[in-house]
Length: 234
Image (cartoon, helix red, strand yellow):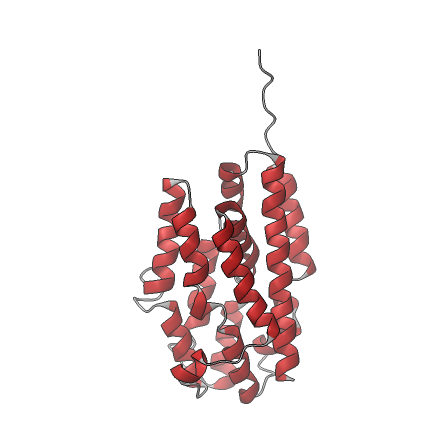
């Protein structure tokens, strides 16, 4: 009689991911502290928005490959909702795609669409875009872990406060600041269900190690991006 295969330790992996996030949380970086408290001058916010566009204006390079490579029909349906929200804004944004919300935010600070797309990115922003494009195209387990359990997991609790700061300190309307409050709600949905994801796609401890490693790399590369942007605007 064959020995019963031992189930991988999901709790162990989730605990390791929590430690990774606790070491470099977006909400504790000086860049986001300054944003949430309205401490940046408008020219600094303008340059931050241009650099940070490496995420929202290029999300199709990240979510798209994951939808294509997802091996599970039910989970692929979940990803379809994410891709639809990012590209069409039909779930949280009243039919406005996220990239258009971001361009609207930039316009409130005097950044035209052409200027936004012509941003001369700092090294950290380039590294972020290159890393996530590569990891999301390399394989579903690693890519989804990086993007959802790594990157998007740190958005809730920060983006909503940035939205409030944009209105309170920089005079934006609710509509102009929509990108960040939509981002708060959308990423709560996108990054949820980490335990269910690991249970479905991690059959072995080695699979869990891949997921944990992807989260670690994602958090590190995001922190590098924040550091470079912070240095660039100061």
